[in-house]
Image (cartoon, rainbow, N blue to C red; front, side, top):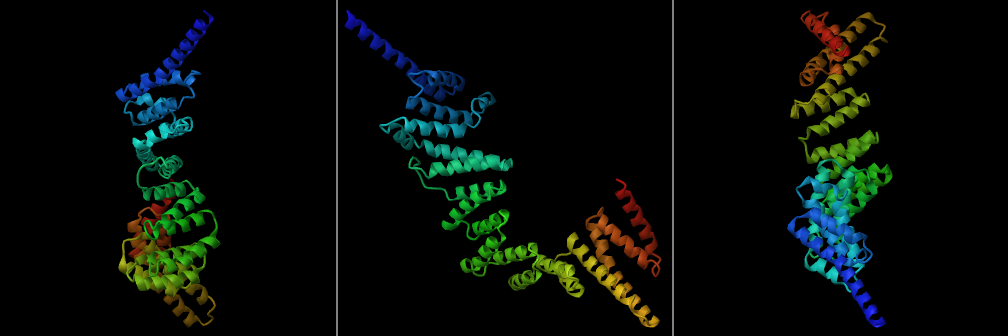
Length: 391
């Protein structure tokens, strides 16, 4: 009789375990039917029961449910998991670790489950990137990479995923991560020089200007004749306030692209900042000849003439001879007058710009003594400037 009771107890326990594992089977069935609320209820019971909470199939079912929740259109399911795809991956990995015979791993490979999960992560990362949630996008893309690099992924690796992760990282200011991903792109020769430029920008983001400059200077060895490197070197030396080096690479860039207005603009502004007025005027004039609808260039050329004229006035003050002084002042006023059409054009392109209005107010005031028609323009500009400054 004692043996009979013992046997009955064993059978009772077995049926209890089977009942709890049956919850997992039910959860999988409910997932297939789209009844995710019922699946969640059954799975929650299985996850809290001693008989099934450490069963590999329980976590496999959780992974399936998490993926289904991510794809579900009904918003009521969105509260089930904070990050369903991350939890899906964690659940699948735990299922594999709890299955010593390897059946779960084989099941994931055979059914290409990690392939679909990687695609979901790519979609999620793209949405987050578009929403400017760069940290979230990086997390999604990094998990996608981890999955596709694993031995549970059945398919070819998509090189673009490294670039996506790099872009998310650089936008998140996680520059070391960005360098890691862009270096992978460079190693795989993906997008040519582009990831190399991104590596340079990441080094600049880290504040390592020495390494950034060295990296940039080495790029012509890898990409001879590529004008992007020259443009980046110009930008680097402009930011580093090294005009001589910048002008050197501007000259190289002009030879390769003689109709690039921005090169003449950059050269002109550098000369202007160094008080090389004639060189600045020549460069900015050429820039406007190529493209005449840019405020910055019009204002820059006007400023070059104004600054040159102001310098001429200062030098005139040192002239003791009255006749020579008068001639020098007239010459300075002539240069002031040359600034006028460019400042007026700048105002057309940017009508409420106070810097342009102040410059025009000064020019009209100086020049109206010899040209009475400028008096009304002076009053008009002064009134507009006053109104803007009171806002």
